[in-house]
Image 1 (tube, rainbow, N blue to C red):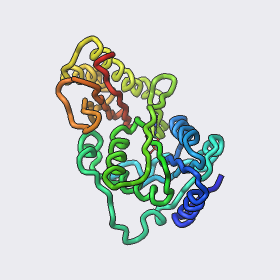
Image 2 (cartoon, helix red, strand yellow):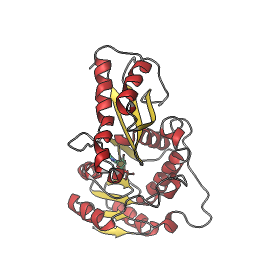
Image 3 (tube, rainbow, N blue to C red):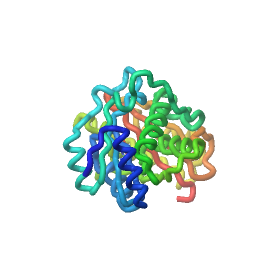
Length: 283
Ligand code: AMP
């Protein structure tokens, strides 16, 4: 497995693979890998002949008060995981390589990034679109796999790729969960043992909402009222947002008439967790 630290070397490797007819699959990550990341890599492995992952904690998607400095990092463990899955190259640029002095070009996807996480994290999607765009120019992938756990991120990247004519196929991967139903996340490492039962409420609230829809409830306010009460009624968690949206535009809806995205962001202690599910009126 190659470890590549510069953009020039990454581009050279990509050009070389492309010249030999190889198909490059790419999984961008911020490291501290878990089974969810590994499943994305296995999907890339199945669909391509050369698999590249990136490990880069991207400063431009963190606001100054957020957890950039304390974001969990463990490069040795990540490299061992990547080797196990059969990754061909790990791209690990440093901060200066990605954002040299004088950097001033950003990618903004204006509409789908407004709602949900865009409200509570105003610089987040600009940072994500910018870094993914830069990573695509470095890795030159044919396809790239993104998790549905970050549903709005996936929609934003799909939109960016379409709008900017990027020649990359975007593959969405279903949410990977722990046995107890908690969506896997590098940030789960922040949870204290006594917070874990509270964290499980997100997944359960998604199931509760689907039950309500399956038994005929169509009013978004009614569903969100019950979801919020279930998660935070006793004050053990604090809801950042609980919203039901059109899964394509990510705009809020008032009434469920087809598949609808229920998206949650919840503070459990000092940890902000997100989760989501497509609610299906048909069952
Ligand atoms: P991150 O390292 O958190 O930026 O995530 C890198 C990629 O892994 C993104 O495409 C995420 O959506 C995806 N991912 C993270 N956690 C999960 C999960 N539990 N299930 C599916 N995909 C995930």
